[in-house]
Length: 292
Image (cartoon, rainbow, N blue to C red; front, side, top):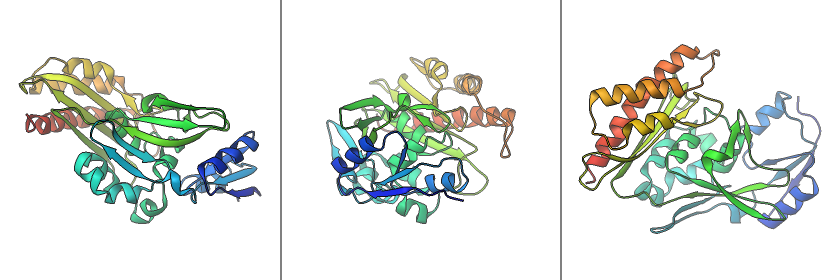
C-alpha cells in the first residue's frame, strides 16, 4: 500500500530544482513512474514529497552534432529514442536496445533518465551507454556537474545523485572512426530484463588489423554496470582469433560479481558472461572491420 505523500508538478527545469531544494530532505522525482511506483507500492520507499517533472518539456529532447555528439534530455521517453531517425543513423545500437526494452507501453511513458536513476544493474541502457562512453549532467540550485556514466552508478539501485540534485542530460560523444558496438541480453521472455547482458565496443587501427581501443561492459552481473577492464586489456594491440576470444570470455567471467537469485545461479551467470562476452566482442569486431 502506498503511503500518503505531497505531490508537486514542475512545469520547468528551474521549478523542479526549486522544489528539489525545498524538499531535498525527503523527496523523490517521478517522470514516468514505471519503477518508482512499484517500489512505493511494495513499501520499499515512502517519500513524503513527490516531484513530477513530466511536464518540464525542456528536459525532453534529442540533439545531435557531428563533432560534439548526442545530447538526450533526461525526460525523453524510451519510445522517442527508439523512433528517432538521428539516433538510428548515428547510434543504431541505441535503437536496437530500445526495441527490446520492456513493452511498448513502458517505452511510451518511461524516461531514459528515470531508468538510469533507478540504477537497476539489469537495466538495458546502462551497459550500452557506458560502452558508448556516455556522460551525465546533473543540476541543483547551486551548481551543475558532469560525470562519466560509469561513475554515476554506485551500487544496487544507488547513484551519486545528491539531495536536491536532478539528472538533466545524457551526453554521448561521437563514435570514433573504425568503431562498432554490439549488445545482447540473455532472457527467457523477450523484452524482459536480462539475466545477464554484455555490451562491447571495438575500435580498430588504421589498417583494420588489430584492436586499438575496447570496452566490454557487463549488465546484471555485478551491483552496477561493470566494465571488464582486464578483458579489455587483452584485446589491445591484438588480432582477432578464437584463442583470444576464449581468453576474453574467461577473464570477463572472472571479473563479474553475479549473485544467485530466482532467475539464475552465480555459476550460470558467470557462464553466460563468458559466452556473451566472446559473442559481442566478435560481433563488434566484425562490424568495425567492415568500416575500414
